[in-house]
Image 1 (cartoon, rainbow, N blue to C red):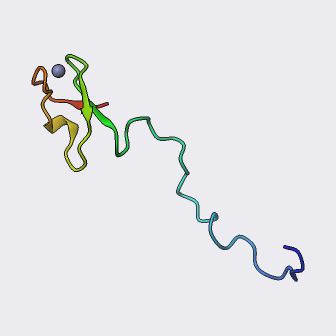
Image 2 (cartoon, protein in one colour):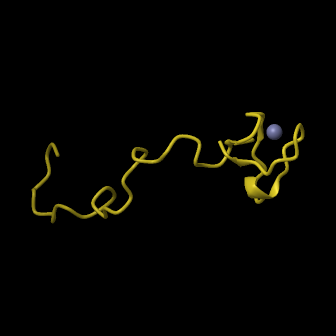
Length: 68
Ligand SMILES: [Zn+2]
């Protein structure tokens, strides 16, 4: 802090709260915008927001999809 008096308490403000962990640590494909994959034939379809993959039957073989 150029020109500052240095009396302000440090450790306050953005970035010190913790508990957010950033972008790392999540499994690929486990977020919004992923795909649903058929565990039987391997066919994939874009995941629909608000609709779990396990409720969507595979368009090819009818098996319920899983999160891909
Ligand atoms: Zn299938």
